[in-house]
Image 1 (spheres, rainbow, N blue to C red):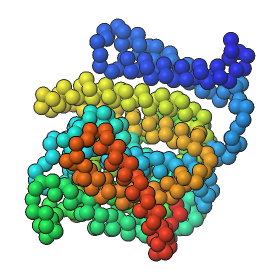
Image 2 (cartoon, rainbow, N blue to C red; image 1 turned 120 degrees about the vertical axis):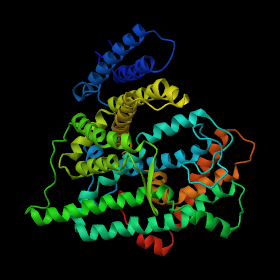
Image 3 (cartoon, one colour; image 1 turned 45 degrees about the vertical axis):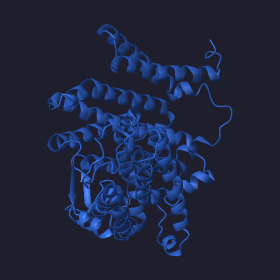
Image 4 (cartoon, one colour; image 1 turned 135 degrees about the horizontal axis):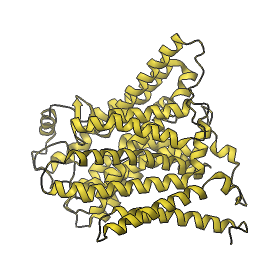
Length: 477
């Protein structure tokens, strides 16, 4: 009755009930528990009903009957794709948010249950420090982050590649990319990575001397670069994009025409195509190499199963940024953010159900995973990757529409924080290794300390004339 009278609060309440109901029913139907099969089927049917209700309640035609009394900014300004040299709050803040997720991810890995005890031999592992204090909740956070955050980083990095290429041309674009990515990678891999991994060597009890560490480092047979792998791989993608743009300029008369794939107001179709492409390029690679294997060539390393997956998201970002209908695509994402949020949560609940009910029992028995379980695991990762990434894009395009000084500073420093945070994180974990604190307290200290120290360090470095001169104002790292 209240909705029939045009009451917006009743409409908002109904929308949230539909969203939360969808997530709740999916959770009951998929998560392990003492529920009979008939109840799971019944809950699944109700989840579909509530999902349909969510779709109906978030339709623009229905939402127009319940307008906001005070709009903070005009709708056109909120959803328009910015000019090449403009600063866009939603993308700036989303990029900074993902970098904070990276810092949080590395901060809690030392306290996750998934790792064996701290190695007594010097090896390069995803968690350089494995603390005796653990908490299973950090495994859940690590799994959530791993499903999407690096793919989203590559998508955001691709968004403004096409406008930059049109403005600068291939040669200047590639030169700027080398300055902004190549030189920082050399510093991060050549200087910061050895500093970051020294605590992993020190906790083995070996000779703590500098020369002994150098010998142990060189005996690894490769040069670990830590999180800097993202930077060199992004540079490769940028170089390929610049080369293809140069070829296009030579072969096409109208080189300034953007790509058109009918994105306007069709996010579901675009995401569906991206999910299919992601499955095609990821699943065979994962079956061939495994999910955890990394390939290394000197300082260049990458997760063997994922380079094509990341390339697909990078190309998706280029397509969104290049398309003349990209602003309509992003506006549609912002309008329907509750649907994308529900889809992301439901996909992650499904992935957790697969891990808990199918993968962990087999892994605990030290048996190889059946092919069907491997395929299901891979497909749920692909599904999470797409739905969660676009859910965050929709959320930030809807709500991160105004600049704030503190967030602007964080955004401007986010790339530098990504570069310098790893030594800070690992050394803080090393300092707390023997301290009598719980895992949540230790992880909190490491995460907050890493954010403050890396942010402050980058702000200080940006005041150095040489660093300030080399800083290129781009949306992407």
